[in-house]
Length: 280
Image (cartoon, rainbow, N blue to C red):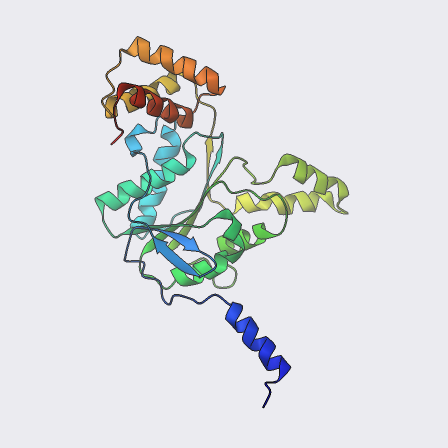
């Protein structure tokens, strides 16, 4: 007997639905990547991070994020955090370094889960899984921005928590080059075409207001740039006279047209290679 056409369609659609991997084992590692298609968490054995003491020129942001994260790890109230500002100044590095420090001090207390910005629409699904865990968890989204669409509504809902409220064992840490996570021309364009432009702009920028902790990162001074270079050179045993080190660093930064933590790290990699050293 032939199968009903509607039954065949339903069966085909069911085959297209990704299989879930069952309850997440959040005790298997200290860091994970959320894989949206399979609704699963991939554990990371090694996290690429820079030791906290090597992140120079961002001491104020470091101290504030450390304090907020320690409160959270200790079961106390803590805020969602938005790290925004200049490119290459260590926003994502700071989040990973603070997490790494706390895990080293108290293993098993705090997990880090990275969600890619393209998967933000499914953030609610991730929250539902994490809420079932006994661990304290930082959900980390790097380089967050919205150029269109309604993904920001998903993030806003997760930050507010809706009727259920944000899971008590979860905070959200995000980085962005823009304080309001949207380009200025997008906000201005919507303001000019809206019937009630003031309300439209308020809706767009209100997302950043859901983060209780704002940490700004700005272009570094030459003095701080030298501090970064010197700290890296000392840490990795790159024996170069300070004057020579500074001169080479200035030349390197001029070829890049910028001074930042990322540029400092790239300079150190180049220098180590020339000296035949490894950065272990």
